[in-house]
Image 1 (cartoon, rainbow, N blue to C red):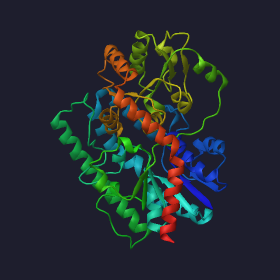
Image 2 (cartoon, rainbow, N blue to C red; image 1 turned 90 degrees about the vertical axis):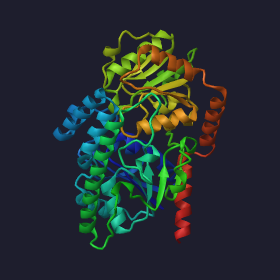
Image 3 (cartoon, one colour; image 1 turned 180 degrees about the vertical axis):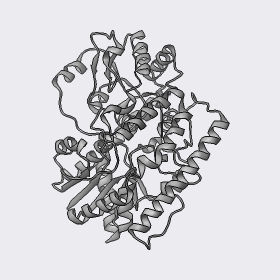
Amino acid sequence: MTLLVISPDYASHLLPLATLATAWRDRGERVVVATGPATAGIVEEFGFERVDLRLGRGSNPGVIAADQQPVDEGASLRGFFAATREGAVPTLAYQAAERLTDLMWQPVEAARATQRIVEEVAPDQVIVDHLAFSARLGLQTAGVPHGDVVLGHPTALPVGDEVYGFPPAWPSAFRPDPAELAELRALCERVAAGFTDEWNRAARELAPSHPPTDDAFAEHGPLVLYNFPAELADDERRPVLPPHRFLGSARRVERVDADLERWTAEAGPFVYLSFGSFLSVRGDVLRRVVDALRSRGLRAAVATGSTDAAELAPLPADWLVRPYLPQVRLLEAAAAAVTHGGNNSVTEAIGAGVPLVVLPFSTDQFAGAASIERAGFGVALDPNAASVDDLAAALDRVLELEPRARARLDAAAARQADRPGPELAYEALAERAESAA
């Protein structure tokens, strides 16, 4: 059997997809990954084959900087980073305005390239990143069955009256102005209409008889795999979800680091701090979190990303500070984590039973933070408004989590350990193949 994995050239997307594919690899099956060159090292480390597929103008091998991107992508990133300083709604509006270029990059060419790879590889099964819209368009118009992996919050695939890019839920720390929200929704609706027109034009060129869609953002594959814990899902949305499976998380096995193992074995709890590969640029917020941790006398493991550690100095000598840290391994030992609310951080923390302080900046991070808050698994704060005292109080709360919430979080982690995401993905695709036979 051959599994084909299709991913944008971003480490944060490829890592969970590649982890799901280990269920096939460990059974002795062939795994081929179609992605760009920046993440070739990740493919090699997993022991998979790679074929080249460009699905966007940018890339991210692990830590990203605007000046390391093509000119257009670098300018877009700088604009995004600036918008995050203005607040949630300006950031979402900026992202909405950028959406036509960063999601449907060369759609016909990328779709045809995807179709050629399918012909050459002849896979028995396919999993694809839901946000790889051009690749999914190629699969859909060619009638190729596939597992559609939603790596963000489930609302990344809108259902009902939801509009892509407009958060259906907000954490309590955010109180957007109703007029600004109305403008944002109207903008997201215009972008969705334009995006849908482009999708339909490309689909007609690829397959003239292919039926048009009313909302390209709501399009999905025959089986949706949500890389998200069922315990955080909104029960009100479940009846309108497409055929799906909640995977919990895709917690990968990371290379053993002897220095890190010695550090985690030292006495005393520690807090893991990371804003991921993009939002680590917000050194001002990292600095406030660092100050809050120091005020409580806590040890910390800090992934500085694109922020120079010197901006956070002086740092305690017993802290672990690097640009990049093995997140899954550290979460296995952490007492709590502070995060921007990215999908990998949230799902991997829940899989390790680690409560969260979430500081969402963009996209579906607001809905994810609201889910964490609703479940009682952590605290959500506005990264632009939270003071050092606010952050310290939030750390106190998650380090002494309410007992019933602590029990639910531990149970969620136990379920993921018993039924890991890769195994659930393998079983779901196998069941679908059997039913289609």
